[in-house]
Image (cartoon, rainbow, N blue to C red):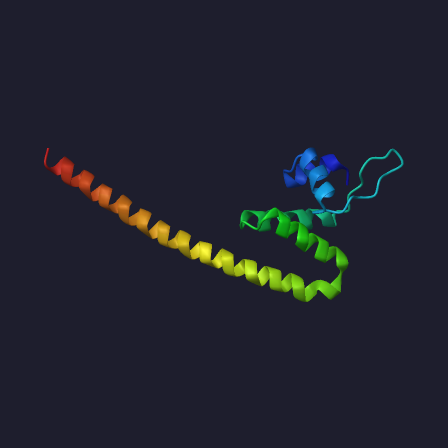
Length: 123
C-alpha cells in the first residue's frame, strides 16, 4: 500500500505516518524501486490499535515502548500483557469517574428543567 492509501484508510496525515516511523511506533516499510514507501496491509490494524491506546490516554512514550516490545517478538508477551493490564486499570478508573460525572450532569439538567418549568408556572 502506498502512503496515500494508508492515510486515506487511517485518517492520519503523511507527516504523522512519517513521525510514527521516526519515533518507532510503526516500522519503516520497505521501499519500491522508486524509493516510495510500500506498506503491508497489516499496518492498518496496528495503527487502529495505536489510535485506541491513544484515545484511552496512554502516553506516547508507553505506546513507543509497547511497539518496541512488539518488535522483539513472542518473548515479550508477558510484559505487553502486564502493560495492558495496568493501563486497563487506569482506563476503568477514568470510566467510573466519567460515569459519576455524567450522573451529576444528568441530575443538574433535571434540576434546571424543573426550575424552568416552575418559573413558567409562576408567570
